[in-house]
Structures are given as structure tokens and as C-alpha cells.
Amino acid sequence: MQTQQKHPKVFSVELFPPKTPMGEENLAAALGPLAALGPAFFSVTFGAGGTTRSGTIETVVRTMIETGIETAPHLSCIEGTRESIGGFLDRYKDAGVRRIVALRGDLPSDMENPGVFSYATELIRFIREQTGDYFHIEVGCYPEFHPEAESATVDLAHFREKVEAGADSAMTQFFYNADAYFYFVDRVEHMGVDIPIVPGIMPIWNYPQVARFAAGCGAQIPLWLKKRMEAYDDESQRQLGIEFVTDLCQRLLDAGAPGLHFYALNRAEPTSTIWSNLGLPAAADRKRLQGLSSSSDLR
Ligand SMILES: Cc1cc2nc3c(=O)[nH]c(=O)nc-3n(C[C@H](O)[C@H](O)[C@H](O)COP(=O)(O)OP(=O)(O)OC[C@H]3O[C@@H](n4cnc5c(N)ncnc54)[C@H](O)[C@@H]3O)c2cc1C
Image (cartoon, rainbow, N blue to C red; front, side, top):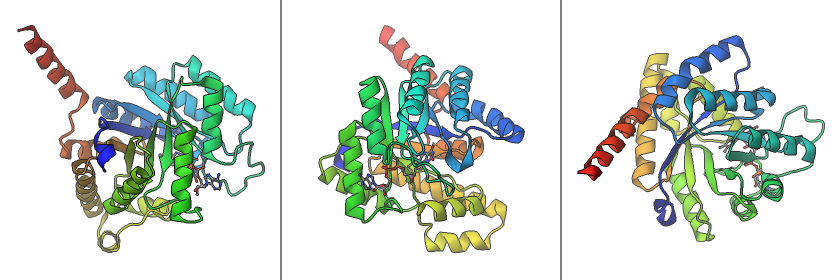
């Protein structure tokens, strides 16, 4: 964890583009309280969980306008052409976006055309070729390894290729085992890669939903936690979820993780509660502290 400790800590929050009027209402209700935390940036998923791809740019622009906080679109290359991906890059530049989360994307079960790029590395090369250093490029990585990877070693080598292609920083898939993150970061450092690797944090609010996501992406839920969750009612699951995820975040930060990326799922309460449990300053506290330090500079 030596090189990770050198990076400034960055706290960010992930949203998804709503698909229904109810989804719109949920996002509208969550945006204000999440913005009040003062994340360094929001990110907005692209085509994940069946959401439309055009919804990403709308949600990015809306979030930037309503909150004044930097917002990064996710951009995946699966099923994309050079023209369609180039078109997204142009639109993001026009909208004032400076940060992109570049991914291969989840493989749809009904995929007809895999697209021109097979892996995120090729997308990153394309973005750099088309736009130089204009965008800060974030990429995904997998402390418990990508489910399709041939082996842990091969997956690490592919991660290094993404960094060599031009990734500036990485956010992990969610995990509930801090040791998996520590081991992953140690192996990455051993390969001489020193970009920030920010843990992706999935609050456990709706346990059955989280268990489904975990099964889909290969994140392991510790057996003791699974057993306890399965024996609890909704309210007790939420309490244990907040307690467990707060402890996980604290352990990661204490060990030198360069921030946290919260998968907020367009819901403010779990992320806000964990944020506050960790004693992270919210936007208003930061402004007050900045005001205090600038007034003491004057004296
Ligand atoms: C932070 C984060 C945000 C995400 N947001 C979204 C989203 O908005 N929309 C969405 O659809 N999905 C999203 N995902 C999920 C992601 O798209 C999937 O996990 C996808 O299966 C892999 O994407 P990747 O960019 O990590 O792929 P890659 O880095 O391309 O890796 C995919 C697999 O291919 C292997 N591989 C890489 N290069 C090569 C090569 N040259 N030869 C052979 N094998 C290779 C890797 O080892 C890995 O097993 C997100 C994931 C994370 C961690």
C-alpha cells in the first residue's frame, strides 16, 4: 500500500440514468443530499443493468447543472463503432466534461455485434488518439479478479495494459473483503504501477439486491455476513449493512486507500450515513473550514 498512501484521497459517488418516472423521482430526491456531501465528482453509468445509453449524457449534464459538481460519464466500447464512440467524446467535450470512466462494458446476453473494440485497453488508446490528454481517464479493476479472467496473473497483466494505454486512475468493483483489495494493490505496486486505485463501495441497503449483484460480478459476501443477513428482517439487515460497510471503509482508509467511490444507486441515505460515520467532512463543513483557514491567513 506504499504508493497508494502518497495519493490525495478522493471521494466520489456513482449514479445511474433513471429509466422510469419513479426512477426520475428517486434521482431527484437523492441528488441534493448526495451533492451536500461534496464529493469530488459524480459518475454516471452507461448501459449498465439495461439502462439506455443516451440517458447517460442527459444525467451527466443535469447533475453538473443542478449540483455544480464535476460529473464523469462511464463510456463502454462493447457494441460501439469508432464513429459512435467518437460522437460521444465530441458531445462530452462540448458539455464541458473532463473525466471519463472507460470500460469494456457488460456483455449483453443478446449481443449481435461485439463492436470494433474488444477490451477497455483499446477504448483507452482510441480516446487518447482522438483527444490527447483532454480527459482524465478512470478505469475499472477487480480485487477479486474479473469473472472472465483466465487467471489472476493474466487479469493483473491486462490491468497494467490499461494503465500503459493511458489510464490516470482506477476504481474497483465492489468487494466486502478488505484483504482482497490489499493483496491486489500490493501486486499492482509490485508491477511498478502507481496510479490511484480507489475502492468501490456498495452500501448494503437492500440485501437481496446486493446479493444478486454480487453473484453477477463475482464479489464474495463473507459467509458469516450472508448467514446473518439471511436470518434478519429488512431493518436489521440495513443496520448490519451500515455497520459492516462503515468498518470496511474505515479499514481501507486507515491502511492508506486513496479515497472511496460509492455505488449510491440513486439513493442518498446509505451513502450519507456511512460518509457521516466515517467523519468525512460534508461540503458545508469544508467551506466553513476553508473560510476559517483563509481568515486566519489574514491575521
Ligand atoms: C468502477 C466500475 C464501473 C462500471 N460501470 C459500468 C457501466 O457504466 N456500464 C457497464 O456496462 N458496465 C460497467 N462496469 C462493469 C464492467 O463493464 C464489466 O465488469 C466488464 O465485464 C469489464 O469491463 P472492464 O472495462 O474492466 O474490461 P476489460 O479491462 O477490457 O477486461 C475485461 C476482461 O477481459 C480481459 N482482458 C483484457 N484485455 C485483454 C486482452 N488483450 N486479451 C484477452 N483478455 C483481455 C480481462 O482480464 C477481463 O477478464 C463497471 C465496472 C467497474 C469496476
